[in-house]
Image (cartoon, rainbow, N blue to C red; front, side, top):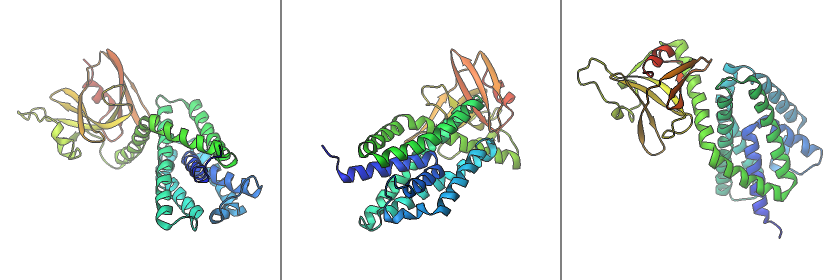
Length: 320
């Protein structure tokens, strides 16, 4: 039974949007080059991708991105900037591809939805890189970088050359992002918070924070010391391994009267988790954050951002 042309078109656009989330420049260079080789026909609105200048520029940016991947700080800046660039670029490409084929409101809606698909894929990619960086695994990071590029081109090739593949890839990508995406998105958010905290650590004092410095929605979760002898102190952090929080959950480590808690903003509410005291612990230092690996019946980890106290000071509050 032949697939609906509208369904195939939606699958192709979704597949390309996801591919751009993994690697925008490799996908754009591939689309332009493959169209020039007559592997497929691009919509009239995006035939400009066939221009040799566009192909060469996208290839040069792809090469630059490949080099930048090897430098953690520069890589963090690049990924932070592309959190905006990739979805905006896809929204523009979709709008140009559909211009004149659908009414303007439908074109705008399609561009917005597919830009969100790109943002979701970009967030998953950024989170995967953070996961590969904790602990530091240079070889794994290199393999992930190569795999991202290969997957981006393979998705674009599959969805544009085969109508059935277009629908299957788009559906699979949507399901995968829905199921596995939240954990990776939280890891990506951790990377973004770690980068901004690193900047604050460079230009300000790295220290414990007082309760008024917490986000307003989290302050009611912190118990004040009635005697004022041990006022609560907090630092930006994330946790991993606590089933009640979820992987790479970003929030604040708070020390209340010498008892540690973790407070964070969930999707619909603010939450507070009592942190178990650890019987043994280890500090793993990193460029973007330090990791406290704790053993408290079950292992868990606390990621400390670089605008807070020294990891030794935080560790002293988390061990028995």
